[in-house]
Image: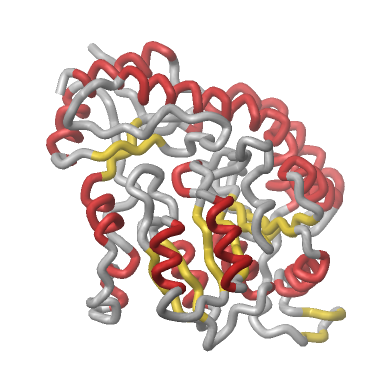
Length: 367
């Protein structure tokens, strides 16, 4: 019987390093330091260096990294923040939590990241204070074009790197170092994932980092002195920081394996009804491998019958989510709308075997 190929398999991912993680956990337990201890400080320093950023401030999860990162840039009520609408509400949720207005921008049909021309069209009509650039699926957005627009129009760039740890441009500049600040998630399924929740913001601005350190601990400027609005308890656990320190040196290798699998798919899937992303270089770390098809349910059923699991990331545009009712009824983003109805995620994770990759390819080509 054909084995079923999973979209992801965290048990496979963790098994080779389980003994190292056990040791790291034991060391934390015996140390007596559990919150904002030596592992958190060490990880922040190591991750900042790995990204090529001056500062890293860890927080409890990726969503709060987005929100507190925006707050550190002065996003409050009355501000307008441009976001894409095809990224599962994470950025939009953070904007709303800050009391700001989300302004939705269409995406590029190939990369599914923000289309600079679509953003420029929005900027011609209204002011934008901050732009969240989501490096969706692990693909670096067009940062050269977006940076030029930021310089021309005076808005701040905030990068959402939750799916793009290590994606870099042709000059070797990594995701998270182009804007005023950038958020990361360390949710277990991420390219760099903890064994629980975790997040961080990286920045080259010392003042932004100082604000973030206050916001993650109640908005304190001194112990029990709350001065910053929007602060809360948002701290990365010491034990998760220790786990992340074990994993960080392995991340480049994991990313390379993901990219190798993705490029096999892009090269070897040959089916006119399945649109694959083009083969990529270092600007893609293949957090997810997403294809487009006009018959998503048909392809999903076919793959399942051939022992291949699949998922949908993400089916509902933010501006069509039920909580908004008809607030954004007039919003028309044709590429986003079309993409959300046709995206399908194929298995792609570092421990996927060559035989399983072949199984996925053959199943796609047999449809």
